[in-house]
Image 1 (tube, rainbow, N blue to C red):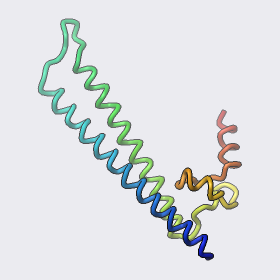
Image 2 (cartoon, one colour):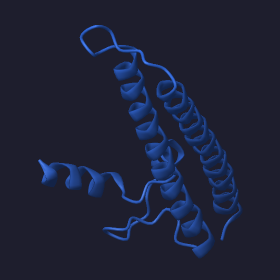
Image 3 (spheres, rainbow, N blue to C red):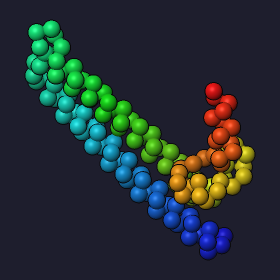
Length: 127
């Protein structure tokens, strides 16, 4: 492995670990806030005369926060998989065609598993 490749992988590992920590913090924060809303909503009767009110808004916000937490956890799983690829020595190899994923793409999306050509083809096939 060349020094350039080693330096690139070290930088990618640092970026992946930083993103992982950020997503974990986002998930924890969203989950904690959702739990607070659950506790607050359960202890108050906030319905207006029609039976709707702040309680419904709190439920929607709680559900939104739980989706945010779930999305953050999904990103953590993708990052964990990318870190495993770094350890296994196959980081930056397209899972579809086996060609190298350009460094520019990995710098933008370090957990990428597909090269641009395969990702574009996959997007077009789903339509």
